[in-house]
Image (cartoon, rainbow, N blue to C red; front, side):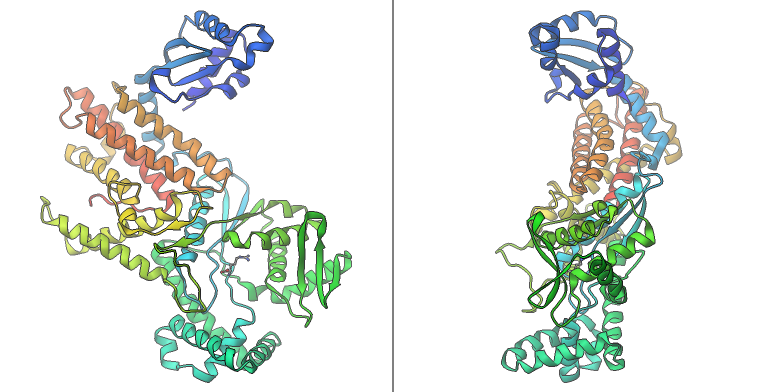
Length: 575
Ligand code: ARG
């Protein structure tokens, strides 16, 4: 759909203006009666030595011979308003959408480029809580958006599988661990002993010393420590993977913090050689005063490494391994300073690629009453429990509606539908607003089938699908339907909103902001509902209209399938 470019070309040629300048200035007016594109003339006043209103008026008078795709041109104030030939526009759009199918909004802009998306990255032996869902879902959608644009996407999970807390866990497990519980509910058991460790260490500080010693032993390859650590890691990962599977999320690599520990000496050596390391209170640090950042600690005074050191090593390893064009870190906003420091150290070390590291931050997940999460107190909400609750609440709604159905759903269909809708509802909650904003989880909102929710969109899809089913047109036939004769307000609006998805995907990718795409998909669904409510489809006045509206439904189904797919929201044929 190159209408903007076409309009710009026509205006430029007829008015003797620069086509690029015109295209850059063309606006989409806020109101329908102002046309479909508007050229503001304020900026040309100086050069043309005329009042903007006069310029617009003169322009409009020159634009008399209209090309086929423009139906009218009007002057209003300092604007030239362009009205498209709606029938032609709709016909073009629907025809193209049906022909390209899942290639819709595929620009190929990323062809030949590699992008690394690091996301989820939970900590071993800690619950996978709703905060991790934020990173997991945003990261998954970003990866899918980039993939749809043709990028080679590598999905990384930087597991938190290293650090002094493993010393604590080893001590705690030897003191209070329950073998049986560790097998049946690994993270629950690890959490229980971790919480206990913190309580007891308040009274017996020697426990902390012991933990530190055991972590040091782990770092030095102690067999006992290593065996326990490996076990905690394997069991935790298994639990994480079952959540990933359910969410439809996967990773190409689970190289976590521990993976980089033997790559650290090389990093330290490099920084040393480049003269960047300084001693400060016994620690080895890189000063970042010139950037107004606190120094980045590389080695603690006892010579051990920290979180940041492992990130330095990880970034270098990733660059060597993947030669990326961009590496994105989907991690909560509180870690913004950490990433600034890490990226700055790498830049200071002369790595040109450091400018292609991007921290994509996000806000907090809150529940009404302003409760936050903290692992230490043991007061967390597991993502799994949240998903189960969403699915069971959805199931109740579906079951309640089931009796009124012509053909009731089988038990199996009910379960599958509830899973798709419940998970979609949770997923959309994480992407519907700008990612830096905090989210408040309210069930009434999330599962409001008429509100700003995934079920609303899934319902629009199911309705369109049902019309096609009832029309007796097969999916193959639907592809061949003629879209000629569309063009009413609601039909045109639906086509225009669908065409905007292209731009939304582009902007969403440029800003690493899935909400831009999510919002536009929602707008498309609202436009569909308006069309559906205003235009008789199966009962259309004549056969040509019926066919064209069915074609529009088919285009909507196809476009929605593709774009909800990018958002990771599953579709159902009825609900
Ligand atoms: N494991 C960390 C956490 O849960 C997140 C890791 C983020 N990624 C990174 N490269 N530092 O807080």
